[in-house]
Length: 328
Length: 244
Image (cartoon, rainbow over all chains, first blue to last red):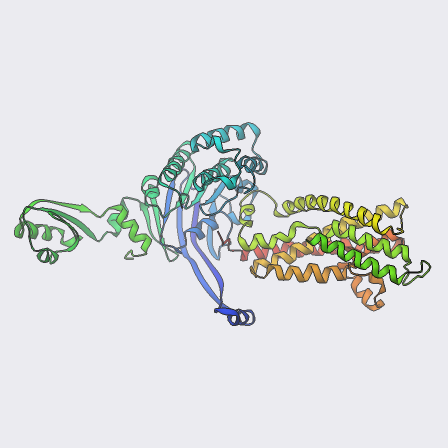
């Protein structure tokens, strides 16, 4: 098996009923429902190798979660072809489901009123994990996630971060080969996020697991994902190495200058967009093609101590992605 | 709270019928006082066994997206609810036994005891079939939530409380209704939920009719399972796994 996940021209439409406000609107929508088609995915294609960790990014409503749900067999594709571990996810074959896991940051499978351990036991039965493997996996997971002392606590009494870690344990007891993580660090504090990230990294390396991760957390992506897929409005805008995002999308470069004496800022504004003025440091962004000219001009006309030319940071580009501001 | 309603209903029907049959010799529609009172108590037990199905929560799970958890795991959603049903029935039955004992001690009715083992076996079979029938009916109704996530409860209320209870003989014996109506009713699955098992118990119907009734139940079970599978497959395609 050379490809863990194959997606080919996947299309997913949702039919939504629109309702006008108030009681009158509700009654009207019963008799003459206004149907609207939402195009969540407009034909996306990509392949993922076994053991790859891919970051899925895009603004809200771009189709990230829809893709993950389709890949895990929850949604029926409107068109196109999907294959995960050589199975059609929609068939929901037991052998398939035993090899995957979908974890959503805002959603829980743990039984609210019981200690997490009970849910783990239930999952052991459901996934038919042999007792010895179960004990071993559980031990490993609780050590990695540092939750050993919380096993007997009622889930409702756990903090959000603790609960998220328990969710991970519950979802990974059966050692899935393919893991779909939807916003795994949402709502967690920095330390909690860090723990989850380290864990995802470990899991990926130790088990050679294939992981797709969606996140709005910059650090998740920069620290974990080698490869990113950028989606917007149901289409793939970019699919490649994280570092290449900048080359592909940053149409500008950053020039940082350090001045030896005060100058009229207005003069500098003529050369490029001033991003920041912290005298004597000035940062401005200049179109890629004009960088050399701009630098020469600055050196000639201003009292410059120091000048550096930098790429726009990955963070900046990703921020743009989330705002849906990428120039397509 | 619904347990209280259940008891009130029984007490009400009990007094109604015991005043109709004040004279123990009166016989109306083939019921004497003893049999009609057994009917009332029998309905109480049967309701507890047949109608106490947890699958009423399926609509909720569909509309709030909890069902996602099950779709992602190698478990059968139907078997899951079937087990929950059995647990719930055991619980309900134990409650009803307490209630019935209390009511029995207070009202001291003369009840009809069936001792024929063949008939008792037929009652047992019809009861199992009734449970399966109701499970299917309830599941199908609940799956309307795939299409109308916010209207789930209304359909259920209408279905369970009003239609089913009435048509299955929960309110009064069906054989006091017009014959033509009874005939139509007998070809629907409803009388086989409460009325039929109780009729068998009371010894009001003979062998051939019992066989015919059981066969009709089985045929309905097959039809309903087919519908169930079809609706489930359609519903899942419609399901958008939203919420949370």
